[in-house]
Image 1 (cartoon, rainbow over the protein chains, first blue to last red):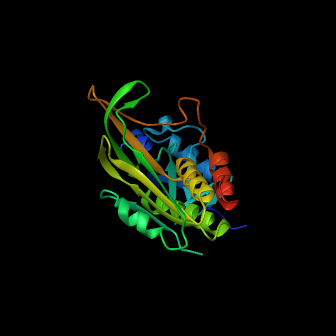
Image 2 (cartoon, each protein chain N blue to C red):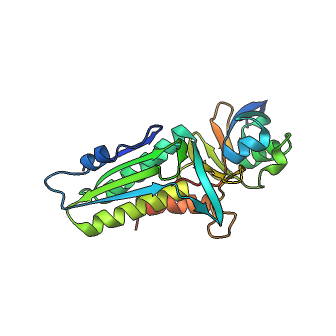
Length: 86
Length: 164
C-alpha cells in the first residue's frame, strides 16, 4: 500500500458555511488519500468549523459523495449547506 | 429525442425564449412553472432574496435532471433556467418549460423537475427581511425536509426513473 502523502486540500465553501469560516475556500491539512469523513473532521477543527454539522453534504469533483468515499490531493471538494433552490 | 436546455443565468429569465424552445408542431401541451420571490416566509416579511450557487455543479445537476427526464420520455421537450444574484419581490427565480404531445406528460414533467431541483441542485437563498436582518434559508431546519446524501441519491434515482 502506498504511504499517505501529507498535504493540504482546498475546500470550497458556500452560503452559511462560507459565513461560518469567513471565507469562500479553506485549506485543510490531510494525509492523502483520505476519506471524506477525515476531511470533515479536519475542517471542524479549524476556526469556525464547529458550526459545520458532523455529516454535512460533500461533493467531490462536482458529484455527491458519501462520507466513506476517498479523496485524493487535487480533487475539487465542496462542503454543501442544505440546498434551497427554486 | 430533443436535447433539453438547462442553465444558470444572472439576468432576468427570458420566458418567451424558454417557451419557444419547447414548442413545435408536434407539441400539443406546453406547461410553464415559475418560482417567484414572495413577500412572506415563516411569518416574516421578506423584501428580497440573494441566490447563490456552486455554479459548475449546479449547472451540471440541472443538465442531469433535464437529460434524465428526456431520456426517460423522448417526446418531452424541456427548458430550465435558474437565476442567481439579488432578486426583488416578484422576480422569477426559476422557470421550467415543458412541451409534449399530451398534457399529462408536460404537467408531470414540470412538477418532477422543480422537486428534483429543490433536492439536489446546490443553490442557496439568503432572505432579507423588512427589519433589516437576513438569513440563509435552511429547508431542513423546520423538520419538513431532510436533505442528506440519501435524499440526494434518491432524487437522482427518481430522475433516472423518469421523475414522477
